[in-house]
Length: 578
Image 1 (cartoon, one colour):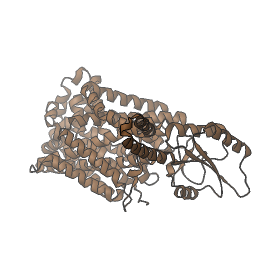
Image 2: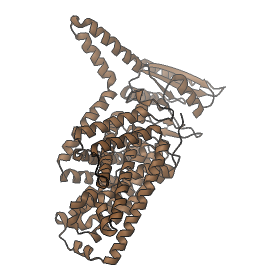
Image 3: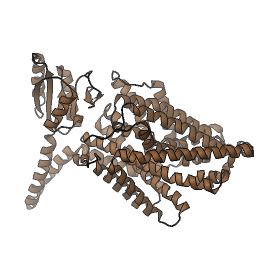
Image 4: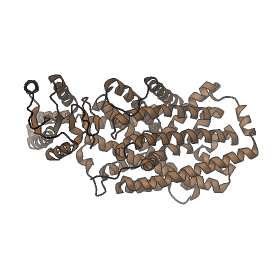
């Protein structure tokens, strides 16, 4: 079922609520770490984000598919490497959803202290589950309303701060700059401030996880809009804050920093508006998590990493089973932590920064391994390396500040990787289970025979999945590359090699000879060569996809056609974008 594509402002709002909500906490984080030089650290973050605009623009422009870092690593390395990036992204979204919803309810608790924060957090997660199950277009309307209100509130706060500074002078600013520099030197202060402030750009990667739901050309505009918003809001608010508040007072008001600034500059009414805005925009960040993780897990399922069970859609075209699974995971995290979200903050920091590093690494691999692939933008290699180094510095800074973060992160990360890798290796695991059952004592024969039959049925179902490769008469080296990919990445042992011919054309005898050679070289693979008469078009691929019951993700062509859009696959060919 086709769904309505998102325009520029709807798509910007979905991911923008996450990244722009950072101004509610990142200014205080940066000031605590860097003191009076926090605004410099935030400007450096904006500069790094500018480099990532090009990095993301090049990668997603070349590979316009959901999945973010997972997608680029899938198309430049292997499924196992891509799956690790997917685990990091899912962890980042889980942490974002739970932390944002909990923080939103804490802000609301300051206004209405009559409810349990953890129960309210659960209700908020449930509300956004309902919105996303209704469909992405409907949830985008809510996101846009929240986004406009947030930017309007921040503009009001900035105006109030400027008015306060104009009437009260720069005395506080001068006093702050006469204070001893944090961490011993200006460079170290900026280093720790930069490391803390990098968390303020989480959400920038979200747009790449639902790019297939966006209209053509919208993705690059979402990156530009997010960069402009963050580059203005975060450094400016931090600078105005140190013009108004002594640095020593910031840490004690860190949890509701902007509300405190609003109280000083405008009064209680402004603080109340900021608190209401915080509730709404942090709720919007929860929506970003649901939309982003939905696109990612859907893509992983189409790539046969996860069971097809998750692809079931409702009448609105929403993959509700993915959304329900994510909701349950978030609720389980909330129950395990009992509302104490410090451990999740560790997962949030390290997983998000590692995802950014994976994207930069993926861009380098894309340049090396897919150099001929057309792309609307090009990030200079030197800029990519600088961006990658900046992320590594931020990772080091966060680990150095709180070494226990690394242990906490691994406690969440390793189990998720084990589960995903088990799904990738499910064929081997099932074979191993069959062997174990065969070796069990005869006293359990009835039980073991039943289980063996069940596992063998599942294995047969896996093997019977088809893989299609459209060929224009490739040589044996290309076909062998296809077979190697099939052996290393897929559980199926069935492949259809298809050639589309004009009416008077005949298959190349050399190609038929190569096919026979390859068929003998891979006796365990059921190879079928099919010739079709007609035109190679998206309509033909769509027809065959339905006829053979094969997802389009597993229909590859060896060279791009000029009549329709295409995307690269692991083989160096392309996957159709219909």
